[in-house]
Each structure stands twice: as structure tokens, then as C-alpha cells.
Amino acid sequence: MNEFEIKKISYDEAFDRMKKAGMDITYEEAVLILDFLHGLTYLVLKKHFKFK
Image (tube, rainbow, N blue to C red; front, top):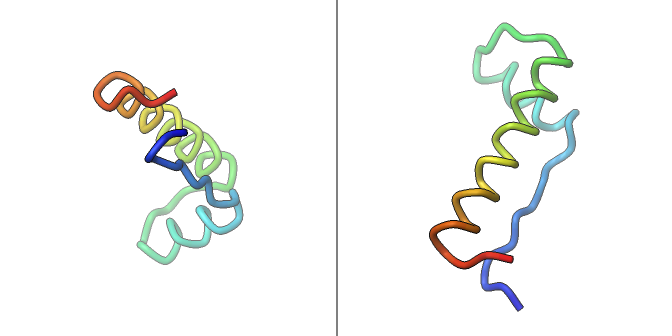
């Protein structure tokens, strides 16, 4: 069992948070950003913390 858990928030929630933070983006851009950050987080955990 891993000691880390990646909890992926919904695209709608991510879009709302980004808009509230002042980002001028479309929903599609928010989806791409969220997917990129999720993948990047997974790669870092896998490489540096033996995450499976």
C-alpha cells in the first residue's frame, strides 16, 4: 500500500478555482492544465518516493 494518495478534483471544481484565482482561461484549458498537473505529480511521486 502506498503512503501517498493522489486525489483528483473534478474538472468543474478546478475550473472554478482557477477562475476565482484570476486566471483568464477556458474550460478546455482548465482540463488540460489539471491533467498535466496530475500526470506531473504522479511522475514526481513515482520517481522520488517509490510511488506505484
